[in-house]
Length: 113
Image (tube, rainbow, N blue to C red; front, side, top):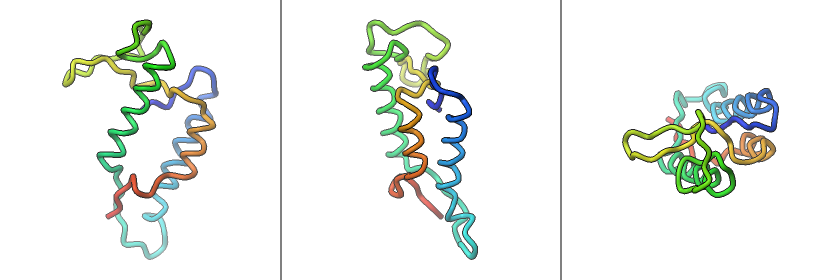
């Protein structure tokens, strides 16, 4: 979610997503590892969604709510649970930031079992 940019190659976004996935599952793939699963912490997920939506609302016209100049588009959908509109498609920053985060995932954001 929120990985697409309108100004960068989709290939770079895909490579960033794959790099993040590979870095996060490294402990599972390690020889002799007892780790069998990994999952993002609920707090890290909430923080990610909140940060992305805030950036989209405050810095772009593609926000889902709170932005009076928000554009109507297929990027924005209605969250039936909260009644709020939100953007589940666009990444609000540069792919360079995603590239860096993919290479240095925060260990405290993941639970390994």
